[in-house]
Image (cartoon, rainbow, N blue to C red; front, side):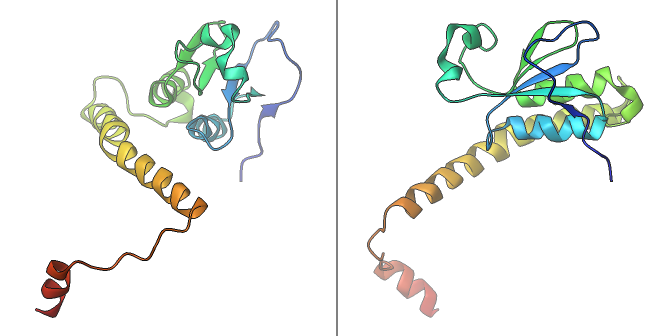
Length: 154
């Protein structure tokens, strides 16, 4: 079991900078936390509120004011969780989380990463949101249509 390498040292990256993750619990930034733990590098987490995401400062990090955003050790910013995960894997080959560039296996990493983001995640997100809405309200009991009842009797 790996111990967390998360730092809680302060608000500014200084000499010997570490990666800073701008994070909102329950968001896609959770996958970045997981990636950073898998790599085992020191990092800082800046917890964001929904209101902080709308500030000019954060819009400077992400044009839509979303999370995740990472501030890399070179001071640059990167957003979009899949892009961040792929970049972190490239920056830390010693973690052996991604096959070598140019290999067929690397192409499949890109394939499945993009497939997950474009094909699997949108309907899962909609379903989760619909479930959340349903838990907040008590819908009337839905009766099956006659076509469905006829189909079930076959």
